[in-house]
Image (cartoon, rainbow, N blue to C red; front, side, top):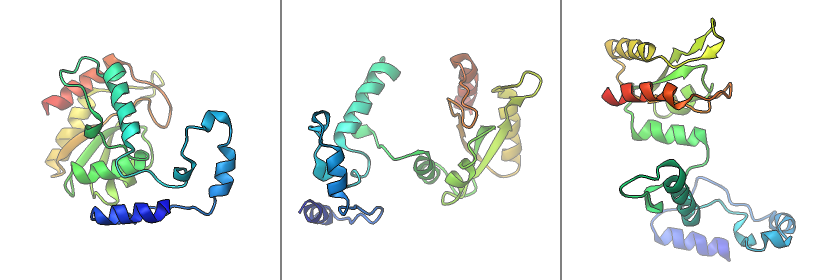
Length: 195
């Protein structure tokens, strides 16, 4: 009944979700794993279905509260749940960003070593160029952010007719798991804001 009701409610709102397959065939197997008292607050009928696009309201509310309390506590206007869209994973996020803020042929600058999927995640449908700045310093065996290298890459791409729309800073880093300190990130962010 839940599946039929959800379908018709979504249909009446003007869309049909074709992006995922909800599986009710394993409901009995999954439900038995959620019988302990600690899980009594779960609606087991909903455990077999993907959440609504953009994230469940309760999850978005929790994320907004977390951001307001720990990430940006001094905002004049706190973030509310209706300003957030939650998506599942880096690949989907990269794909959405590539289509939302870039035009075909634009460039994104990041540092290397980088997550090997970024060129595909941003480029497959967004048709943008993911260009990297070498961050590895063999003398110190560390990954370093360098404003001059970012500026050099920026100028090269602009001269080649590949306009730069954004930079991508991943922290903690992928694939090596290292972490940039705030004093390492801040000069790059300040440089990017000026561009």
